[in-house]
Length: 375
Image 1 (spheres, rainbow, N blue to C red):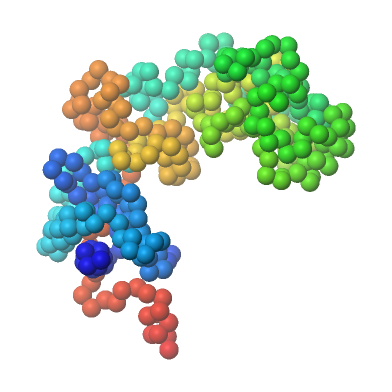
Image 2: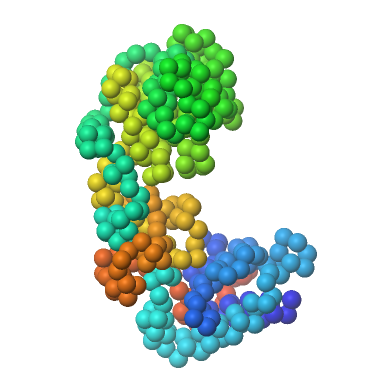
C-alpha cells in the first residue's frame, strides 16, 4: 500500500491532460532493450492504470486489498523520478531526446493501403480475390446512385433476397453441408444468426404483416444477421424505410470488416443480376479498399488489433490496421530499410506524452476546491 501511495504522489507532480472530469498521464520507459508504455487516468478520485506489460487495474480497486502488480511499482517510481528530473531541467530537450529514441513500434500512424501491399504482398488480398470481371462490375454498382425500390416488402420477398445471397458464396458454407436449390427460408434457418425476432412467424405474403412486425420488433433478436460472425465480422442484410420516400422499403448490405468484403461484393453482384435492388453501406470505403487507395492504421506493438480502427478519426475512414513487425515478417526488405522509408511514407499522429510538472504554488484541480473558492 505504501508503494502505490508513493507512485501516485510522483504522478500527481506532473501536469495532466484534461478531458472533462478525466485527468490523464502518459509515459514511456525503457527497460533493458524494450520500451514500455504506462498510462494513468484519474476519474472521481480513482486511478486507472494500463500499459504494456501488466493487466489494467485501478486504485482504489474493486476488491479490498487489490492494489495491482506490486512488483512493478519500484520500477515505475524510479523511472518517473528520473523523467521528472529531466523535464525539470528542460522539458523541450527531454521530449526531443525521448522522441529521437522512441521506436516506430510505439507510435500510431496511417499509411496508404497500396504502400502496405507493396511491403506485404500477401496482406488483405481483397482485389486479387475478385476476378477482373467481378471487380469491374462491383465498382460499377458501388459508384452508382442508390437504386429505385418500388415493390412492397413481405417476408417472402426478404427471403428471396436471402436465397440469392446464400447462393452467391457456396464456399462459405461448404463445411456446413451447403446444398444448392433450397428455398430462402431453408437457407435462412440453416445459416442466419437464428435469433430472428419473430420474423419467420409472420404471414409470408402480407405487406401489412411485415410492416406490423417491423414497427413492433426490436426485442433483442438479430433478424438481419444473415452470415454469422463476431461483433464486427458478420454480414447484415437489413430492411429499412427510405429516407427520401418513407412509404418505400430499402434493402441494405452492411459488413464493415474487410475479411467479409469479397463475400459481400459477390452478394451485391448476385442480387443485382437477379434484379433485386440493393444498397451497399459504406460504399465509398469499399471502392477505396478495392482500389488499394484507403488509409490503413498503424498501431503500437502492445495494442490489440481488434477494433483498433475505431481509435482513428472517422473522417480518415480507417477500416484495417497493421503492426510494425508485420512489415518485417512480410517483406524481403531489411528492417533498417523499412524503418527508414516508413518514417516518410507513413503519417505519424501526435504522440501524447506527459512532460510538464505542475507549476509551483498551483492548486490541483478538484471540483470540491472549486466550489469552496466560490463560497
